[in-house]
Length: 405
Image (cartoon, rainbow, N blue to C red):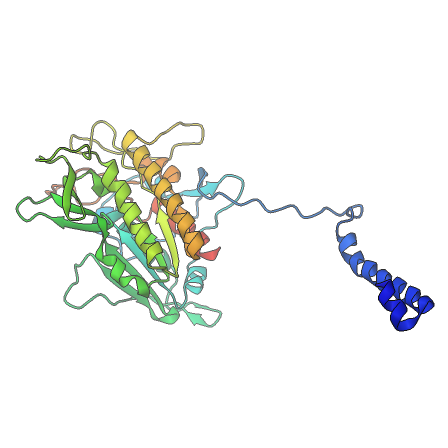
């Protein structure tokens, strides 16, 4: 640099200009050097904010719950309408999920509707996905038509389900004030499945073929995928159109694919790979399983029931059974693998993991309070689904947290 200056300006001028340039370089660095100085007395450098794990914590009393009742919400299915059918103990409603070391705000319907404005959310799964969807509708029903927030009017949704199918398991609900649509799509196995006409209750599972819900994918901004319970049913397993195994059914082939775990894993693998392969541009939320082991005094078909009236406390040990542990492990593993590919493709895929929280709530099921005592029902005591209102409402606290971050 000095040589160039000498050629242009002469020796003395060159040395002066070089000094000015060097000084200006260091001067420009001063703000950055000062940034790394030790803080002045009385000032603390900001520490990185630790990420809150909203899925590890405990249930704490909250006298302000529930946020709705069977009288304020018309979307509760009979089987989960515990208050209507006379459940006598209602203290189970007054517990809120509290993560360790941070807080999970209670569901705010106005905030939720603002977050999802001009969006579409789809629940895909079995009756527990429907249980979750109905909880969301009930929580949103807190926001009455007369409420105004920041110029937005909150209204009850309009049922946009295809006319002539009032009892269809697929539903579409539309909130006109926010241009927000909710789908619930029945797909208990997530993959293509057919109930055999000559053997009711027995299914053909095509483990490498996604179900029809995938055809609606372009409509969705958020997709919440879940499943587990139906992988305990009698089924034949097919791959590439060929029989490869089965569960609780006679087989005329030699195979070791005769447990619950293989079809369950393949259902999640096939579904998540399909989402990645199609380059879904919305947010994929994979929800882990809801416990199936809260029956006490026997299995579900031999008098088992769920009569507890409070959650398990932090100092009480409760664990998933072997089947649940296997399903849970597979769901997390398949999610992790799919998440890697999703990240490489720029796809937003997250895990919603309420399993540990719900394991601590054996008190939150309908049991026998999904019908009148004198009604003749073939249904066993229900220790699978969740009362509405009830602990499952915490899933929507978690959902709002996910959609807001």
